[in-house]
Length: 504
Image (cartoon, rainbow, N blue to C red; front, side):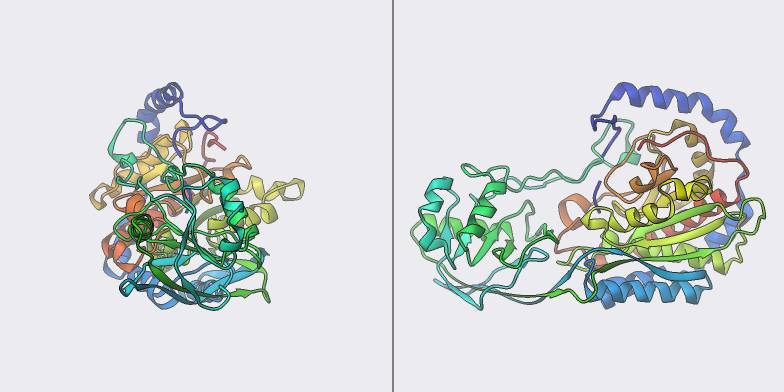
């Protein structure tokens, strides 16, 4: 997942805009709140099914423990897509199917050796970037530190760099120390974006964006890099456009990277053994979205669509629990709950699990382009009611980011109110970026993302090697699935169009 706050069109935050929107919402709220229908009987049925007969923990456990990392383009991602489609069909949803989009080759890690052998044996903690090539066999030697050199000085070391284990950066001294303030816990403006990128901020001489191509040009055997995590937490991403002739890159636990640099600076020559064995998957260049639905029953409204979704893909260094197995399991469980209670919505409720979110919202973008964009899809756009997205953050849902649409706040407040005892808090006017709902708001459509819990998310789990099953509780999974089902139902049953226009 990928994430921002109260935004102007040029990306800047403005308190004046936020204040004005909040006043507008408050002025409109009392009358609309009183008038907005709330189906308390259906909410009670959804709650009973979601609390007493839940299957969300099993769904979540299968995605995290059985399938594991779900990097788009990998065999594991295709396994996850096939399995989730089958689950939707088992729940009784209609038209459960996969939709493809162009993606490119996939990648998996098949083997890794990463250890210091002298002056003592010590296993190092690290993980290759996704789509990094394999090393040329096992590299065994003293690493070459160039973190204090200029570009010209590094070029002069070309003979030593070719085939070497290279430490390219100074010791990492800045770390992500704190999670963001919970947006639902304050009336103050807070950062809603992804954690700041601190890695490389203390690069003294050669900018990282210039250094990596230079080391590749000079034929570095493998590049070991630090990151912004501490206590063994490693933030690991990757670039699907990495070429076969690129130097392999492994992200080390920063404490281990810093130790190696200090040893070299103190005159000690640690000897390392590094072997990366990666495999590219080129036979199937498709990405996959998983789609299923509960058909609408009202002749006047059944062609309209309430869309509920989350991204199914993850990064590769852990099992993608909070990003985003929890969201995917919650979407599946919301679908199961509605089927189990015999829901017959007026509008069609469609469920989607997207691929390629981590590479740029690709799956949701492909869906929007195929079904909603352009003159040929004008009727589909007219029939698109709302999209609810479940992504950034962990487990529990506290409300919704309203994408600067103050007019919708009284409606969402009314739907949220009966769930107060489950831990929901409030809807906020703020816009959030960098996740799948933007593919719909950019077309002028209603799209909103859940406000989630950020405890340990920024500092520990988001895009790291620690994002495993234990990070999310069963209680939070149940709660969030219930919130999704309640909002999907009320949107599907509401008579009038939703008011206002969300920020794009």
